[in-house]
Length: 407
Image (cartoon, helix red, strand yellow):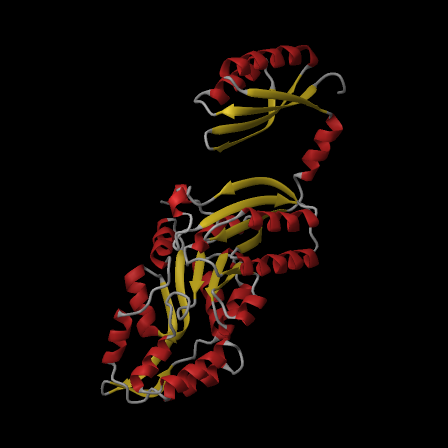
């Protein structure tokens, strides 16, 4: 095959103009060149286009000559690089390596953030294939906006041992101290076809613990908050702590629950996240160690498909200090996640779980994508992915959704 074909890489750069790609590929078409690969990127009206094509020696000179003339006519820069067959074959073989997606997320993604992440990538001998921005362009006067968000996604490839994956994830999780959340996911069929997202409720979907709100109305706020904090830190068994806290609510009038529901502090990004998830067909569930009354309130308001939580016992319009049914603790949340996957007919790897407390760890660990959201230190240290810098709609970027396609 040597001397019968030539492989040439063309790199074009310059001001982006309509029809540029057409005029260049038409030249290749006239000479029956085979395009082996093509890629294009646009940054601030500037175009970078790469084409790798296969042709014969008797045609290559004519093709390059015509491309040079066309480049001069368009006012762009063009460069040719011959590629040997062994180099091409090695490159093709490399495409079979594992591919990973690294998502950088924060109020701002700075040069330092990118440098820190790409240093880790280089240290593990991974190649960056593509970089794209998932969030919209931010005007200069909004750079310091507290509600701003920025997300950049890297596509990388290479071979990694399990120990290397764990080491990379640990390094990335540490970057939250710099105001950056980093997701590291294998780019496989499951990552591209998530179908179910299960959420904890208290301190995840809402910025409070409802049982603490109920306790305040019952005059036992300090006692219940202490028990709640210990449970969320994993210092005491959730079931035991739950029974203790509910018992302290005995005698509270049920009308208080409606008052609390109407004043729930909703977590930033919840409405936008749910609007997008419904639009693209995700099933959503609340799996909460809290109470069904408040879960159903959120279901009606935001369109969740499922709610599983704890049911408070009521007699004569007052709480009895007891609950009915099985406690939704960490074990039960993981069990419900598995059952919902079976019911929806999806693989567990297609599920996402989001939570902040120790009782969320079981479902975070078995989901295809487990996200610790503004989580307690113990939870964040154990989870593989976390979001600590922005609101719930940051989850959309971990799913690979792009602002320009969802707004």
